[in-house]
Image (cartoon, rainbow, N blue to C red; front, top):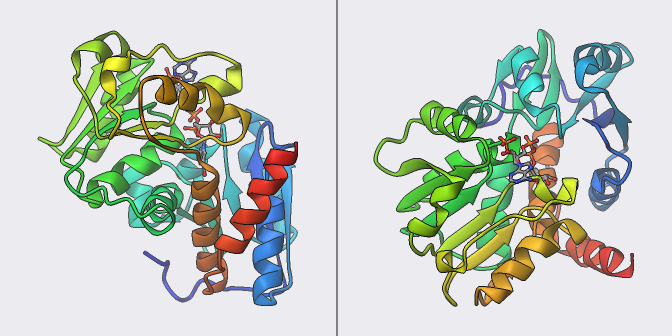
Length: 286
Ligand code: NAP
């Protein structure tokens, strides 16, 4: 849901991504291409902010004329807490990845879930309706994705996370009794097969492998890693070994969540397919 219309939009304006670490983010490149495509003059820079410095960094950015931005690891929950207003989807997620400056402070939104849905449905032609889905992880990204999966009509959403209390907290917050369950990692082998398995953990960033039984998957299972490039390899290789014929990484989601942020800021939706092709080639050349 878009924020109330009295939020000011300054077309020749300043946007930024706040995260830590941030050096290899593709977001500045993506937003520069969106802006060029739509003829919008905007600046979008990556700002590395230590975990305990988000409040000061956002205030300094607002004071210098910052109009909006994105928030990534590890700041999504902290950004949620300091927003003056929130979209419905940010409220359900308990996590914010998109900011828009308004008269009374920051308005927070979460475009991760809609980004994943648009990638799976529009780019890959996959319908989630009635599917049994396993979501690995319960961090900021999983929190954004889980409500969107439920809205898309999945039959069952099982959340398995390294720390059980975090997945229970996520399930309790979303409170979709009957369709959503949290389980221990050690229970994975007893959970049966899933039609969709989504890896929303950051294990690969820490160069750690996930321990997953092949009994979770069948050749018809769609395997999705919301990471991209090398970060998606470990899980997607597991999925290939487990027989999953359809495997998707998170590059499309990255673009679609960015396009949704761009829409919030400028009320114009960029075309993502041309940018997707260019980024895929860029990643392959690295
Ligand atoms: P986060 O808030 O830091 O959460 C990390 C999650 O990964 C937690 O559930 C954590 O479990 C789990 N985890 C970390 N190390 C693990 C390990 N060794 N084994 C099993 N689980 C482990 O991060 P996030 O914002 O959710 O992001 C997660 C990933 O999604 C990142 O790689 C990020 O780049 C990617 N992402 C992609 C997009 C996109 O547009 N494509 C958007 C957002 C995020 P605990 O609760 O036990 O700590």
